[in-house]
Structure formats: structure tokens, C-alpha cells
Image 1 (cartoon, rainbow, N blue to C red):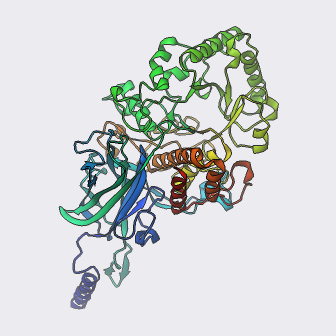
Image 2: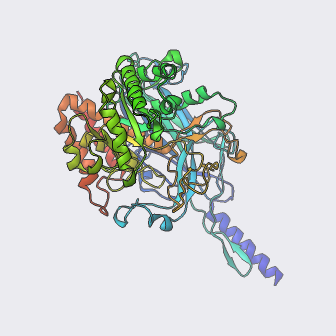
Image 3: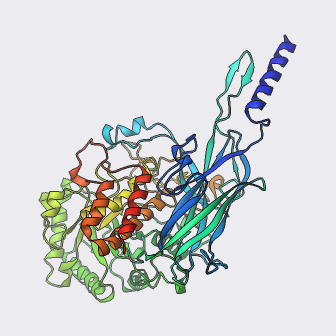
Length: 611
């Protein structure tokens, strides 16, 4: 009997060796490319786009863009279920043959005038079935994301991170295995494919000394020191310049995070955050002391370089999109901080005068406003009306201080509020008096895109298209660095394992929100050393890149409108998102296309309108 079992095992081993090409060694089995409008899950086998897509013809990568544009794209490395060892990706900087200039320059300068190349490995989080969570959210059956479970890429890890934590060379681990047991003999079926993504940001030149035209390079993939693939890369630099100034706003708040970087000072951490978001065309506003304190001229003088653009200059260490451009928004009293001494009407008048006078003198182009309270209920309406009247009836300049509220338009307090941020009722928005405004807040499928881990990239890209369609200036996102649990839940202020547990928002009454509030990751994790990447800096996410793509798309719309008029641009925009906000009813499917390839096609049409 023993000899029979041995014979069976030998035959199975021989069969398995034949199936796997003669060896059980780990191996890269394929390499392909896709743009920044897709999420390729770890176990999406034989993806339809691997054979061809908007940037990949099955052999070569072809990109096009404007000066000062950042083109994100992904290299997807396929390995069998045994994984692959010491995988590296190397980019040969694209060369313009006639001029000899390379994108990124011959001596690279981070985000310099000749462009830059950034490379990240993609970190995957496992998302389980969301049945329990779905029933408690505003996602009704008709508007759920197309995929709600799996290993999803999000955190983007720089290549100089610790090995084993996303740094290069990177080992692709063994994949899941399906084991069949039969008469004490273990059979492992044919190995399944798994994916490891790498994200590349190609910063196109800002300086026209780099001529428009075709630049050629390569993307090389190595496994255990040997070349596994060489993909030709062609970049067509078009003769137009994407504006440094943003013509629509994404406003993102951040928590205090210096405790995660004890080796850095608070100002250095703040500067890193500001720079990262500015390169992604986001205004990071509300987390500084100036936003949470009573009027303080010194605090405002220290903050002023972020408003007038001096902070975003090479002299201050900043390079990239938005050089010399300041933030367009400033919140007074973030999340309702009592900066006006609200129980004292005289203090309200005095403080509002001071704020208005300072901004009119020092930052006249900035949209400043007072955040009276966060998401109030009806019991607080009388109080809201009282405080707003004290501001609006001020005989001094402070009467013009706008009052902001995170709530949908509410008739009972319509005179108290100048800027609403919530569910947009388009009829009520159209009836607002001059000087009042309506923004949108966080995510709310099917009315506008969400920011959660499981949504497609289209959700975060389309909000810029919706802003253009309805001429809404600002999208407010409540938090970007929620590395501690929210205070309104049972785990308040406990540190989160953001690299391994995606559920980041837990209330007393429900568990909700996969990576809600996390768009930026920590390079250091002193509270969980096993998740420490060994980098004293901040790490972006796929979703942060998706927001940037949308913001860049808005600038393409703005340029196209200058050349071809708004109607021509709207024809393209409506092919992506024909309606949003209150034009969409609860429970309807989302009205925008969720397929990234459609955005790539529409983007090409926008570029064609620009003369």
C-alpha cells in the first residue's frame, strides 16, 4: 500500500511539473500597461484590457499630453501562483532624438522644468463582502459599485521603502492556493495568475526648451536580475500648456499627524502635506492652527505664503504644477471651532471685522468663510440663526463674512447661510440670491462620485466633470489622513492599521467606510512597526491620483472652452455624465460611465478642441 501511495505521488508530481513548464519555481508570466483610469485587482485573471487599451497596443505604451501635465499609468506584472522573486521596474527616460533632451533631464531634479518620473509599487488591501455594510449606507441596490470585494490596490509605495514593505526589489508572494485532498494525496491545480501593479507618474516638462514632439524610452522589468520584459514607451508632447492655476476647487481637510513622524518637526510635516496635495491640484485647508484659532495676526502672517503662492516656489523647495499659485480657500473655525467667542455678540462683531479687514488687505483673491457648525440637526437652527444674525447685522466690515454650513439647503435657516455644502437641489440652487453658493461634500452615489476604496476610479475622476457640467466651484472632502479612528465611535483615537484593515470609519451605530478619510498614507508607523515603510514622508494613494486626473481634465475643459466655446465642451462632458445631483433620483443607476477607457476617449476629444 505504501508503495502504491508513493507511485501516485510521483505521477502527480510529474503531471504538475508538466503543467508548470518543467519547474515549480516562481515566475513572471506576463507584463502589460494601462492608464490611470483603471484599478486592476490582484486576482483579475486574463483582464480584457491586457490585450489592448487606450495606451497599450499589446506591445508598446503610447502616451500624449500637454506641458505641465502629469500622466499616470500602470505596469501590470503577472506571475503564477508561486509568485516571483526580486522584481524590479526601471524606466529609461524618454528621449527627443533631434534635441537630445530627455523627460526628467540628464541630471534629474525632482519635479524640475524638464519633467520627472516617479515610480511606486501598488499595495493591495483585502476587502471582504460588504453585505452588512451596504444595508446601512445610502447606496441603494441600483447604484452599488460594480465590484465590492477582492484585493484592491490603493497605497502607492516609493521604491526606496523597506524591502518587504513595497520597496525594490520586490518579491511577489505565493498566491492563494486551492487544495484538493484525495486519499491522503494533496493535489495543487494549475497555478492561477496574480497581478502586481506598479504606478508611474510621468511629469511632462514645464519648460518649452524641451521641444514638442515624440519622445521615446523603455520600461524594463527584471526578475532575479534578469530581464523579463522591455516595453517600448512613446510620449507625444503636445504644444499646449496645462494651466498652473486651478479653475475648480477640491478642498481636503487633514488631521494632526506629526506624532507619526517624531523625527520631523510639525512645520516640516505640514509642508510635506501641503506640497503633496498642491501637486495633485488639491487645496489642503483646515488643519493648521490659523484655521482653529481666534484672529491672530502672527498666525495669519505665517500662513500667508500658502495664500499668495510664495510657499509654492523653488526658493521654498516646491517644484511642479501650481508653482507660484496660492490656495484659493481659507476656512475660519474649522468644523465649528469657536473662534469668534460666540456667546459674546460684541466679540463676534469685533472678530468678524478683524478677519474681513485682514483678507481684504492681504489676500483679496481668496474665498474665505466661517464654518459655523458641522452637520447640524433641527435643534440647532435657532442657535445658527442667532450667530449668523450677529455677523450679518454687524455695522462694520465684518457683516460680509460668509457663513458656511455642511448641510443641504434648509428653508428654516436660508437667510443665515451663505455657502451650503451637502446634497444639491438644483432648483433651490438656481434660486439662491447673488453672492450665495452651493458646494458638494464627500461622496453620494448616484448623485456624484464617492471616495471609498471599492468604487471605480471613475467616481473620483467624474466629480470634476460634474463641476464643469453644473458650474459648481468646490468639492469638499472631510478628511485625508484619518490614521486614528474617528472620535464619534467606540474606537475613538485608536491608531488604525491603514495598510491592512480597510474599515476606517466606525460609528456607535454602524461600521462604515472602507478607507473613508484616508487619501494619504504614512511612510512611518511607530505604533505598528510591522507596517512601517521606513520613509519619513507621506505616501499617495491611487484615489489621490484619480482626483488629480479629474482636476487636470477640468483644465482641459477650461482650455477647450477658450478655443471652441462651452457648448462644444458640454457635448463631450455629457457623453461621460449627462446628469448628476438632484437630476438623478435615489436608487437609479449612476448616470456616469464607470469605464476608464471612455474617459480616455473623451479626453482625446477635448484635446482636439484646443487650438
